[in-house]
Image (tube, rainbow, N blue to C red; front, side, top):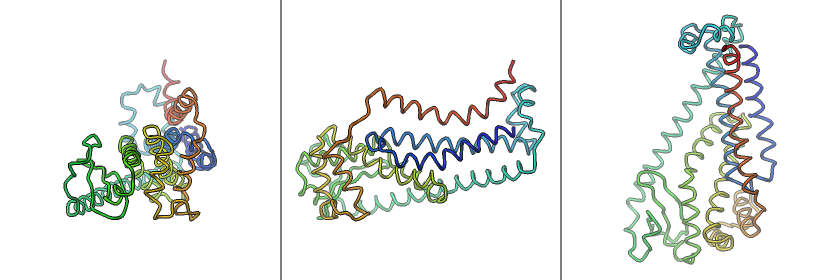
Length: 312
């Protein structure tokens, strides 16, 4: 059992500190943002699984009730293979720390969920007061579109029930039909991939654990890669140049091509659309996705290895 806890700690620390820092310096996530998002999610899942399985093992060693519940269906040889009776004092400390971490994680995720629902409710109430009916001249094929009377050019996706695509009259006046299709396709890309939940998860973890590099980088990279992924969705349907021009027109008043740090991502997105980076081949994307999916299995293999070797 001590060896399992040690190995789980090594895997968690490796996935939480050096690997995220190396991944942020890599260039390939910009070329394949969907694969990059998947890799980040697998790293987060690996750390959380390490902590969860370590909590289960240490709690089973310290508390007889937990041990009886976890190992009730297992034969005696499997229970003996974990050597749970030899719990050292540091196992008690580890159990308390991991239990506090699990409780805090649940608290920050619950808080983010509550705050998200409150923000959506306020936004929907605000839109209910301001938004007119859908103009009859707009094509119905554009989906659940809601037009907001506002000179400020903007468009965004509001998740919920029902979900809404919202565009202002300022954007309708500024964009051509083709550019408007690119903007709306970009927002639908966010909706289909459920990027809102990924953003909420990354924000909650970064807020709750600001000193852990993995969660801080996960939040930053998620906000960046979801935009690149949605840009790719729009460019595949409407073309790279059209999408870039739509992005410029929609953000021209914000200084889209300035060098200020707050606008740097917009400038990078425009450059990326005007000069698309070389993409990975289908085979390489599949291999990268499969390799990343195997990483969260490492803590599970470490946890179940003693029991599997004890089976006849």
